[in-house]
Length: 316
Image (tube, rainbow, N blue to C red; front, side, top):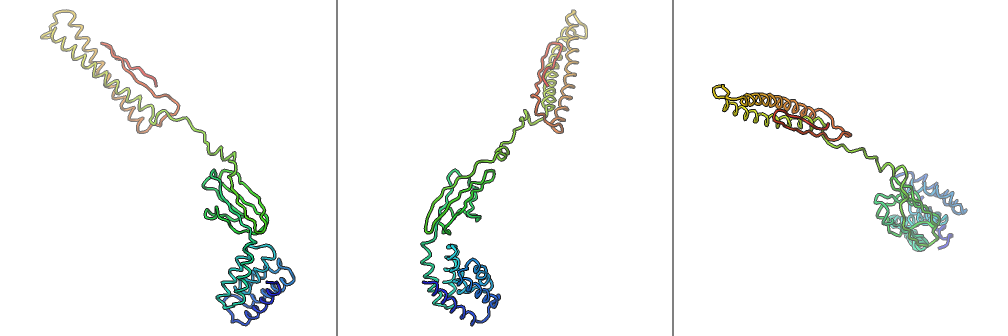
């Protein structure tokens, strides 16, 4: 349909709109904005007309405003916007009972459809799942991936954003009716982000407990063992002494040695039990209050027992 027919249809509908009763919004200002936009469009000044038509639509949405807006958008190359407004004009004309505008909008939308460019965007399998895709500054969600979406012909910019990576930018140009498919990769990791994701590991502690726990309870165990052994040895020596010295009268000198050995072993046993108690106290302290050390090796405790002595050895 020619521009002359569009203009005639617009003027006729505009007159009809002015005869309608006032509605919500500001229909008076809307009519004035529509008239300004229409006159500018007739002078082939659609870039100047568009703001007035958009304002008229905002103040009082009408089918006549929509077809004038769509016609101007189509002339300046905003084909995807024009398609949306042609479709809206058809629906609104139906509700307003304006059959001529409905037919005009239907015909123009049908003619415009093949001229739209279409772009299919997919993410490469290697792209992270949290990648965000922006097309001309608009974020596209997962449902938009892999779908041939209509676009205006011309240049377009696509970004892939991933936290910790550089933005991957793709520039492309589409002609009228052209269809393209692009597969996008994520950008390279940022040097700072790579360093941040690889923290320096501190030396692991050799134990979750303080060394005092091992020292204290080790000494306690060794003292308890030494006290028990020497105590039994002292009892044995005492039994031998009683056998050799009935009624506290010793028959030979070896009996005196048994008595002396029993006394010594008894004293060692007593000291060992005292040491065991002190070690246990140290172990309890280390268990409840002392902090573990991350640098010192685990302590070890050992005990050696001689007939008349007990020795503790270890590394701390």
